[in-house]
Structures are given as structure tokens and as C-alpha cells.
Image 1 (cartoon, rainbow, N blue to C red):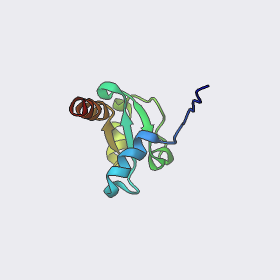
Image 2 (cartoon, rainbow, N blue to C red):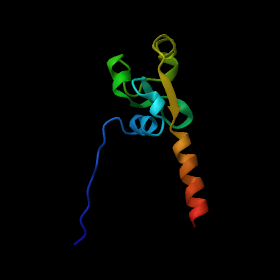
Image 3 (cartoon, rainbow, N blue to C red):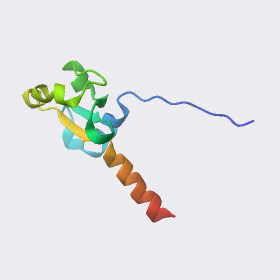
Amino acid sequence: MPVFALVDCNNFYASCEKLFRPDLKDTPVVVLSNNDGCVVARSREAKLLGIKMGVPVFQIKAEMQRHGILAFSSNYALTVGKYFRHHML
């Protein structure tokens, strides 16, 4: 009988951005939904600033500028994934 596991990681997409960009240490980071509409992941620093999950990015533009919050697109991960799948097949 196959065994399945469900893994949930805290701040996953934001943590991945920081993992590959060590210069972002201690920087508040958010990752945006497809087409960059809403916040789908927040770093610990962004959470401490009160950024809520699912908030439309246009509603937090002023906070992003005030606190130096960086936003990354989740579309990037999709593009990279397609690139690797294409070249590995």
C-alpha cells in the first residue's frame, strides 16, 4: 500500500526567495499570486509589519514603500519550472 505525506511549510515561497537571495536576510518579502494580484506568502518580517494574507497588492503599495517590503511574482516559479521540464525531457 503506498504511503502519502502532506507537508506544509511556513512562509514557503517567501522562504524560497530568501534562500536563493541571501542579501534579503532581515528584509520583509511578499510573494504575489498569479498575475501579481494578491499576497500569497509573507516572510516573518512582513507578517510583523501587519501584512495580511490575500490582501491585494494595490492596497499595500504605500506600506511597501514605507517599510522597504519587496514583492516577488509567483509567475517566476512557473516560468522556471517550465524551462527545466522542457530542457530535461
